[in-house]
Image (cartoon, rainbow, N blue to C red; front, side, top):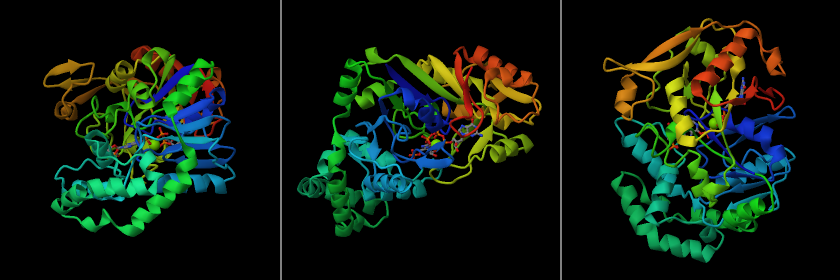
Length: 423
Ligand code: GDP
Ligand code: IMO
Ligand code: MG
C-alpha cells in the first residue's frame, strides 16, 4: 500500500503527529520535498520531538527515507541524529536512508536567502534556511548532490566549477562572497559527507521494491498545499511542490501505485510568514486560537497568524491532492469559543465566491462569508472516541465533512499520540 500525507492549508496542520500515529502500519516512511524549513512535532511516551528532516516515522520500526526531491542541510541532519541518539533513539544506516541525488543546501544558499529577503520591499518571510536557492541550483543543474558530498574530491571539484558564479551573485546581492570557498566550511561539509556516506541509498528503488513485496509505504509531505510553488499563493509560497503528485515525482514512484491520499486539516487555520489569510483574526477569538493552540513556528519560533476555518482553501486542496480521506487536528483548541465560525465563501469584487480566486492579490482582498455553529465548553483532550465528543463538536466535524466532501477518518484532540481516534 502506498499512502501520501499532505497538509491542506499553509503548513503546521499536525502532519508529524499523524505520521507518527500511522507509522506502525508502514514499513517505510519517506519525505519527498522541502527541507529543514519544515518543523514536524511528534509527542509520544511523554517526550516531544521536533524534526525538520528526519521523517516522523522514526520512533517506530519503519525505515525512514529522505527522497531526492528534497533539499538537505547535512549539518541540520547531523544535529537531528545527535538529538535522537541522546533521546535514546539511535539512527543507524539500517534505520535512515538519504537518496544520492538529494540536493545539498550549502552555506551560500542560506546567505543568499537572507540577502534576498532583506532586499525585498514586500517580504515573503522565508525561514532563511536556503530552501529557494538550493532548488534554484537543482533546476539550473548547478547543485551539489549527496553523491558529491560523500566524496571530498568530487565536492571540491563541483565547487571549483560553480564557485565563480556563486561569488559573483553574492557580491551583486551585497554580501560577503568569501563564504563560497571558506575552507573551514568546506572541510566541515566534507566531514559531514564522510559521516553520512553509509546512509546514501536509491530511494526510488527501495520504495518500488518494497511495494512489489506487498509492503506499506507512507510519504510524508512538508509545508501545506497553499504554499505549493505552482498552485499556492505566489509569491508567498515555498520553492517546492507540496501537493500529493509531488510525492510520486519526488520519490520516483509511479502514480498508478498510489492507494490513499490523506489530507491533514487543522480545525481552524494558521499561517507563518506573509501572504493572504482571508479569515485572519485580530480579536479575542484569534488570541484564543493562538494561545490555546500554542501557535508558534516549530522552525523559527515566529508567532503563527490564526483565523477561522477557511472552506474554499480546503476545497481547493482536496482538488489539488485528490484526498481520499482527512485527519482533523486541534479540535480541542475550539473549546470555549461560541459561536464557532466557518468561512463558507468570500465576497470579492461584488461577487460571492465558493472557491479561491487564482490571483493572490484578489484573494488578499476577499472578505470571508461566515456561517455560525454553536460551540461547546467541555475539554476534549481526554476524549478517546468519536461518540464521547460533545454533540456540538460532532456537529462541527460532520458539517466540515459535508462541506469539504471528503470523509474525515481521524480526529485529533491533543498533541500526544493517544489523543486521536477514528471517526
Ligand atoms: P506539522 O508541521 O504539520 O507537523 O505541524 P507542527 O508540528 O509544526 O505544528 C502542530 C502543533 O500542534 C505541534 O505542536 C503539535 O504537537 C500540536 N498538535 C498536533 N495535533 C494537535 C491536536 O489535535 N491538538 C493540540 N492541542 N495540539 C496538536
Ligand atoms: P511544515 O512542514 C509553515 C513558509 C515560510 C514562508 C514560506 C517560504 O512544518 O508545515 P521558505 O523558507 O520555505 O522559502 O519560506 O513558507 N513555510 C512554512 N510555513 N510550515 C512549514 O513547514 C513551512 N515551511 C515553509 O514561513 O512563509
Ligand atoms: Mg510545522
